[in-house]
Length: 362
Ligand SMILES: *Cc1c(COP(=O)(O)O)cnc(C)c1O
Image (cartoon, rainbow, N blue to C red; front, side):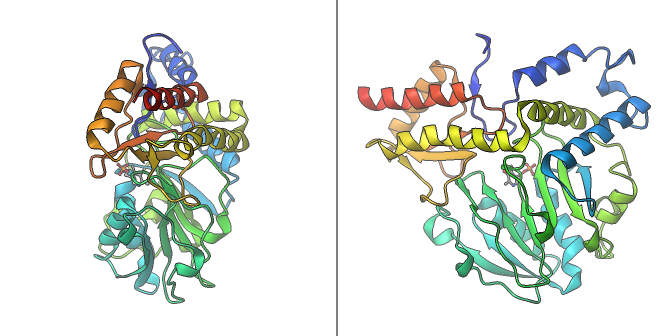
């Protein structure tokens, strides 16, 4: 790690691998003999078309995405998908089931209420979203157009450790913004999977959306064309100008993940990274993990000391050591270490060492 770089634990936008940034830097002024930057080229150019195709192909290969899914690169973030999903899918029965396991899942449910009947299949709110409901705690209905859940709760630091089972004929929809590319996905069960890219795969500005074609073509008539999956598929994400630079950066990131050993390597690393921190939490009498064991996130480790003043001192001391952005989300406080695919184990080790030292010194 160069001396002028810090270990950046931000939840998103978040750190990217040095190799990826250097490659982008080396191609910034002249991409592949075109004499221009990817930022400057037409999205219809041969050079950019090749980048776009490569990004889709890599994503498909890495995550073993079957051919009945289209891969879209859209704008508006994960938050726009909170509306796009019901606009396209809820029309089938007029109803959908939502698990509210955190802030983003709650926002998605609220948005969906504008377009149909939303039933809360489970809510962890009464325990401050510190756990993920078990399968038998989910109140699911056969007449739901889909069952929606947020796979990793970025703010609370909880993650579904299992793929929920919906009633026969009811597909799943999942927000995987903060844990995409860290494990394989059981595609057969899903209608839509989406991920804002700025957590685990690219800079902010692009959202990867995987759409099962079997569920396309039922957008509510009020849907703007930009919110109609069918139109986006027809235009191959280029109904209008796509976020070209972000797609290019995602391509570099996917190449990097490939070179590291793909999803199995990312899975192994996420376990190693999160174990370092949870082991410290489990043996600490100062720090306390926020999430219940069994629901703990591999991606966002949330913890507190119980005293906001000590939290503040801990966060300030971390910054002095080049450990940045470990403050919890503004809505919950405490600490949060976001340890996505790009976070090197050395960064996590540095944080774990600092936690132990801080506790010893009191
Ligand atoms: C960050 C995040 C969002 C919001 O993403 P935007 O791209 O800012 O809309 C939604 N869901 C999850 C799980 C997130 O981590």
